[in-house]
Image (cartoon, rainbow over all chains, first blue to last red):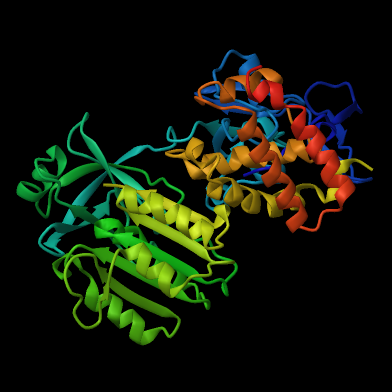
Length: 360
Length: 118
């Protein structure tokens, strides 16, 4: 949720100091930046789709659009986020990330309309950044009756953040997205939680045929539901249903690893007790970290000792009615995620601090 | 000094957007227009609206406003009035002085005909 920059900030007053083509420098003086002059290379190139375009004093959006490249755009003032792009090479000016969610900014996403690059930059549209790579299945085991744990060793190092997702290919045309439950700094392998979908093309294959030793194709990681370092004292609420635990399991371990000191409260929802998994691992984390709590919630029948009774987001909000200043992660059943998004917002969490990852 | 800087610029808008959007979503007169809408994207639009109403930089045109609201069946003056009321209440809650609220209200009011497709 950005705010647009003042138009005067967007139009650097360029004074060419030297007419020589290649080595000339342009001093751009941005209104509003006081007396601070910044040096800007005169020939800044924007690389997109294998071609380089000279940017001049234009925004990345104007530069590409002028060359006939179609980039989705709307307000052109940094507000609507239609022109979101990702820098795969080069530095993104801070102004181009103003108002973006911190998780997007950390991945070099920026708003093309507000991006006046100081140096050469290579950019792609969101998702185009997801290249493919090979991985070997190292282990498969049931986490509960419906959820399969799949461990993968990528052929090349995969850069990702705990809580992001990858695409998993059955063949060239059949793919599904799965969240990563692993943490790059803690785990050698990628760890996925796959819930069996009745008659599902993908999961039927995974449950019936996939085995350790198989080579598979996956995509690079994507998604903006992950832990960003900073504000270690902030309280964090995490609500997930079913295999929605996967990204949360990664996020929690990453936050604890980085010494997060605020509360980290996990609520995991399931219809019945049989749906819970990684219970031992989570209880162990509770024992070793005083700020971490784990509440399994059953929505049907009577809750046994150690479990809460009710819909998972109802239980969480009843126990934590005031979420002012909290960071919130919501993953799993889309209906739960949608309802919880509104309810946690009403309970005081800021829209910018609510990270939602709905999947079925 | 412009209304936008007097009111506190982007920081003021950031403070206002959550308060304003909560009021809108809880308002029985208008909340049904937001059913099924992506909340995160909608919050960005609310922020764009507030930025404009508070005299901030924006590139919105009447045409955008018309297009953006054309699909809302039954949208009429009473709904626009409800939004105006929420805007005023938000700024009051944030202790914005009355004369600045009046200026913001005047800017928001100027979009009425476009929003309602008149």
